[in-house]
Image (spheres, rainbow, N blue to C red):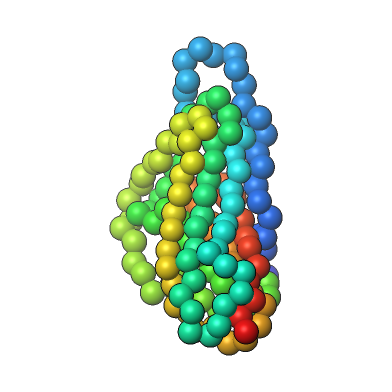
Length: 152
């Protein structure tokens, strides 16, 4: 449960590196992320921006195992980006003004495949240092990463 006044993005700024997969079965059955080595990363086109700049965001999930991994979703949303000043201060969120279909879905990421989500945003940020948080919104899994930018 989140502490009052804190956003979900404020709690995770670390790349997830899950446990390694098993090679016992010849048949490649999709595995939950906890049983497959997955690496999540967030990158931007630059590290420094001005207030009016467009920021190019990229969120990647790479399956570094020999097993497919399956991601379960409870809505049509697959990812989210947020820009935070501090753990309790989310200044911009990609999903905030969006609506998503309420339906179950799955994405299967094959061995050595990279799942990529990109956005170009103009959040009109004031000067300061911010953390970009990218998140795959799969059920029952924390798949987040972050990158730091400076607005001058």
